[in-house]
Length: 333
Image (cartoon, rainbow, N blue to C red; front, top):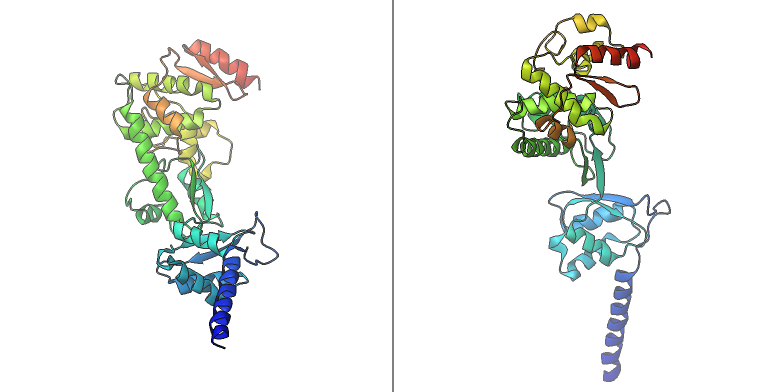
């Protein structure tokens, strides 16, 4: 009898251990709608306990008892290392691999895209439409947005570096903008440190403004440095830049897609046909290539350029050459 009293508990313990080992390494049961391309998503808020994390996982749709998950977390010895965040469970995920993901903080990620040549308003609107980001800027105007990201009183145009930002799902839009603003600060500083000392620009701010114009004027990347060279030549001698994108930016919502002579003749701070020098602020978000072109323009004798209609530009050194190019490429169209 004593032998049975010893053997049976040991046998039951062995069976329980085997069952637990099988469960820990066996894929979790997930809803039929879950797939590799559509994983199950759940969030563990900051400050959550291991028990709360287990409850969240069960509530998300995992067919596993929260008590069983919690017991596994505790027995693993890693329950205190579970990190807050948004996570995804794909088919084939086991309790062991799930815990490893939670401990390592391998959150579900998304991409936030800011495109070169967009205005700041376009960038912010695009981020506001993202279903994967947490919307924390609703109802705020641009000035309030800049205040929210810690830059009160700063004009928003040109302040966000165009890039694809990989961030955790449900990251606040304001956090993405802060990251993009820091990136622009860094890229602008790096470009300014490599500037041509003989160039006409006097400050990083001027470089940012010129880069934004170059960004909007460049239809073909191979022309970018020469376009920068034309604008630098004009700035050097005090010649007006006469750039349409600046005028269009100044028109704002009044621009209907058709730039007319009256627009070019109407004075405004952004009208580079009526005023010499750079406009008061950037007019778009320049990328790294435009930043570098602004500070290290091509050495050229060209003072004019006009679109050929295929994305490339025709450059001219004299007004007569330019007028001939306009007749060839613009008026003929």
